[in-house]
Every structure is written in structure tokens, then in C-alpha cells.
Length: 482
Image 1 (cartoon, rainbow, N blue to C red):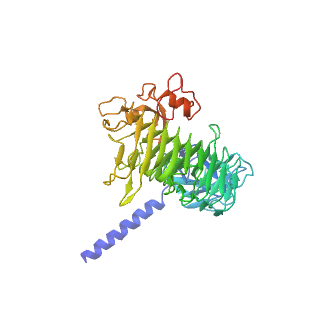
Image 2: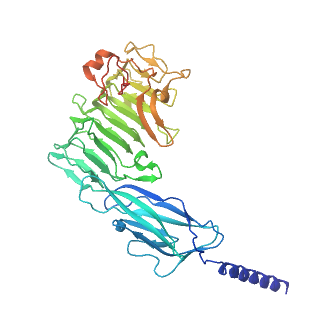
Image 3: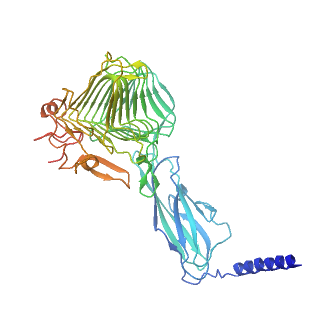
């Protein structure tokens, strides 16, 4: 009997609570409104036929009484490109609440989700698309939020192998959804201003030759396809692993990349083992930035890297296994924010396991090699002393303990823990919360005037941005503007 009484009391309590809830007043008093968390939602730039990230809007009911929405609509010339969901109800330019209301209790809130689905615009430049998300209350009040997005047309490159010499030149970007392979014997030329946007699993593999003819005003850009923000004020483009990267296979030679911006990939550039008597890669005036793995991986390769920035790899910025290599006026900087287990700025060796890879030459000249760690340079020599292991550092700023037993290490400055101006403090601006990095030198950096001016005049009298290296030449790829 006692248990029956408890059960009856419980049932009556539930009925009483339900009665209280159902009796709540949703009369929506005259003049009452929601407080909106934003008056404008910017959904960024989106490649046509793809959807933006979802943005959130909160409708706060600061009133004691409940409020009812009798209609939610998307209005405007570009309304067809926007979608919304309010309290589980899908809203488009053709559908709304379909005859029912959405109630919000006093001192409560509703959540709305908004998305932009970009459609073809048949033009090169991104086009502004606008609409309004309109909320109509039971008291007749209308409240609206402006929706903004930018639609960008692009040219989709079909997956497959480029078997003959091909030039890509267009004023709108190319989208690579799967892979792009340059066949052996073929040359792919990327004209100034060309942009390649890669899907997450897409990559560029070169069995033949790649030529990129960028300029300081119109670089060749290779990056992920997401042009919008992952969330507010955080672009996808500043997160690594947005696409795979570039591989130059063992059959690939004569690759020349000038004024390229390659960033936010899984790996940056991989050069497979090849004949080091032939030039495999010449990379100049370029940026390799923000990779999940190594930014530049060179195995038994002849390469010339000049006036370039290689930065922020979770792996190593530069990883070398044998070869014939020159780095002149480069900034190699390991400041990836995504892990404390990042690799070093520069690692080089003359073997891999039991396989010898002679290091015929590694020259680091007029450069900066630095990072968060106290030692960012690691050279590992094979136990077989007959395998060449030749390296030099000249007129460079180096984050590593001073090397005193090598006559080919000349005119360098060594960063130490006691330095007040060192590592990240050499550069401006560094905005860690926004994941925004530039590696321009501070006026008081120790790299100021460190470069050998004869080498600068011979190779790079102008820095990567086209500024003169006079009256003094700074180490790295950037000259302090006078």
C-alpha cells in the first residue's frame, strides 16, 4: 500500500508539472522582441557548388513571458544560396514554418544555424551574395539578420595524368578534387597568378617536370580548397593538413618553382632519391609553411633553395638525407603551434638505416635557422667514415650550440638561452591566437647586417618581397625595410 501511495504521488507530481508547462503564457506581448546575438552573419568566401561552415545565431528571450515565432523566412535576391535551421525546423527561400509556431519560454533562448551554398556566378572575381534571415513574432514584430557570403567560381581539374606539355593560366582558381599527376616526359607550367585549390586527399605528383612562373605581385599559390573560416576569425587556411602536398618522384628533374606560396598541407615538398648529378629542384622566392609532417624532405637530391621561407612544420622544416644542396638567404623557422613534439628546423644525415646516402654538399649561407627549441639543428653522420658528410654554415643566425671544430662554419651568430632577443623574438608579426605568422625581421634582430654582401649581390640583391639589400644585407629571406 505504501508503494502505491508513492507511485500515485509521483504521477500527480508529473501531471502537475506538465500542467504548469502547458499553461505558460506565450501571448507574445506587444512590442516584445528577441535579443539577437548578431545583426550580421558573414559566411566568408566559398567555392561554387560547396557549402560553407555552419554559423550559429542565438535568439535570447529576456522577457518574463514566452515569445512565439509564427514565421521564419530567408528573403532577398540571393536567398536561394542560404539555408537555416531554427529549433529543428529547416528554413530555405521556399520553405518556412509551414503553419506552426516555435515557442520560446521566458528567460530562455533559441538557436539558429545558418549555411551558405555558393552557386555559379560566371565571373572570375568572388561575388557578394546577400540575404536576410527574418523572424516574425506573434505580435507582428519582424526582426532580421543580414546574411553575407562570397561565391567564387573555379575550374575543376579532372583527376588523371598529364601526358603532354600543359600550361595552366586562368584568372580564377583551379580545384583539384583527387590527384594531379604529371607524367614522365611531360611538363606542367603554372603561369603567374595561378591558384591550385586541393581537396583534403588531393596531391600533386610530378614524374616529369613542374615549372611555376610566379612573380612577387602574382605568386603561384597551392593550398587547401576551403576559403572560409572554420569558426569565427579562424580560417581553414591557417590549419595544416588541408591537402596532401607535392612529390617529385625519382624520374623528375629540372623542376623550377619561383615565387610560390605553398601552405597548410600534410607534407610540403618531397623529393625522392635520384641522380644528384642532375638538378632536381630549384625553389626560389617562395614560401613553404604550416605542414603536418616535414615541410621540405630531400633524399639523395640536387637542389638549390634560395630567398625562401620554410616554416612551421610539425615534422622537420627541412629534412635532408644525402645529396648536393645549397640554401642561400633562407629563413628556416620551426614555430608550429599545434604540438610541443614538433621536429627540428634542420636535420641532415648521410645514411638511412644501413643504406648510404653520401652528403656531397650542404651549404647554409646568409640564412636563419631557428625555432622554439634550444637546439634546432641536428646532423647525424654514419658510422662508416668513408661516406661523404660535407656541410658548411656561413654568415647565418643559428639556433644551436656553437660549432668550433669545422673550418667550413664561418661568420655565424649562435642563439643561446641567455639572449633576450632570440628565436621568435626575431620576427614580426607573430599572432598566436589567430595562427597568423610573418617572418619579417625586427629592426634589432641579430640577423641585421649578418649576411655576406658579396653573396647577396651575386644571388639575391633583392629580398623575397623585392626590397633592396642595401646599405647592409640581412640574413634570411627578408630585409628590414629602410
